[in-house]
Image (cartoon, rainbow, N blue to C red; front, side, top):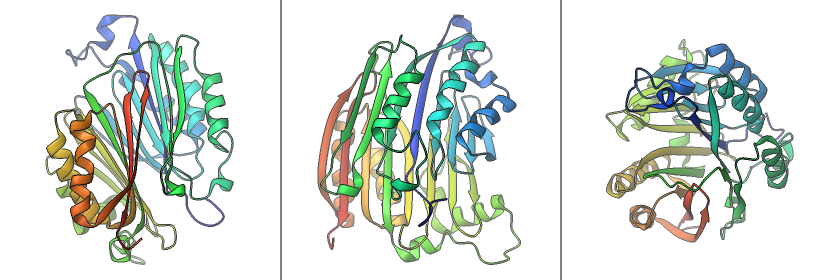
Length: 342
């Protein structure tokens, strides 16, 4: 816990692996293609202990396993792991143990992507998250030499508190058809943020209180076909993972006045621009932030170009837009928006 308040901005780590035995990573044969999903829960708990967080709820389907954490989320696919943590967690301390556990499954690391925004309380972050330079050095020292295509960059914006930090490393340059969209929102509308506070002595556990928040805020309408695993913290705060086939979505909310924050993340096809515009509108309408940043990764203009057209009719004006190329990740486009009154 930070001295001034809880750090909402997440650190996000995505690790991709390939198998020595092709049958282990045959994603077209789910019966044999378990890959990383063969990691036992005790091993996952050991990794999370190093990060300093725990599992509070979980759900899975044929494609991947989804965990809501005490600080954000974990997704385990046969060929990749995505960990997203907030607060003062030490996310990068998961890299070495994950590589170790995967090696025992006959899997080798093929790419890494680490992203984050600006911390609200940077002075409260422990090593190696004391600075982006420290984070990059720690990653460089933790990764095998086979990941030779590496790049680190801080993508600026006209809002000093909303720059975007990106590090990628890979064994080869291989761009897929799937993109990731990461949304960070600050200065949430007070009425909207108030829906993520629990009533004193409500008699509910985290799961039932989470479902109540999901219904009260219409979060379930963002993707009605998704299976939602939600959790409400006491006295306030909310996390949700949604699973829809092989695609995930996740929301995390720190609603305290003065440093309110919410995030939304999902993956999709490059050809799903219309759907992303609809999702962006719903997310912005639920949280009504004063400042909103949107990062799209591995997406062509047919996706990121729709972001402004979706948000500006809602009163959010684009203040800056930056783009950069990263090995294996492709194009990262980072845009910031504020309400017109700011």
